[in-house]
Image 1 (spheres, rainbow, N blue to C red):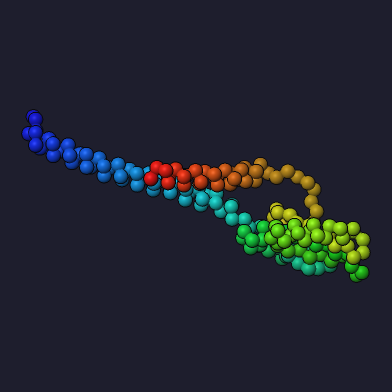
Image 2: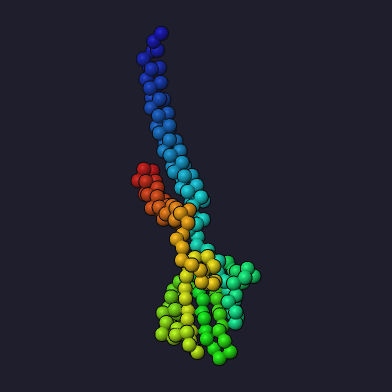
Length: 171
């Protein structure tokens, strides 16, 4: 059974209008999916981007490496551990703390000439792995899970930038 011509035109016009509304809602839905995906990625992996490190913190005449000396450094500010070893008349003194990379690297390079191991020697070292200002450990390679996590985190930044660019182009 055929529709009268005027009803058919009205029906086609409504379909066109509905199609436009449907296209708009698909665009909005696409944008929402994009933002949801971005938020999910950031929540899963982004927490690793906020750099917080644990270091030993003390000022003593023994190499304070027991759990009571462990502190959480300030996120994204103190991104390194620092260890100072001073040779004084009364023995070796240790000063350990969290540090910003800039300050620590400047201090360690500035005191490098005084790091002789003899009396009045001052040695400052900087490191950026958890509790690295503790006792010297044997060299070992990082576990593959750590390497994988770092790789994922490094890949996350360009992916998020790409998603934001796609969002601005498509929407």
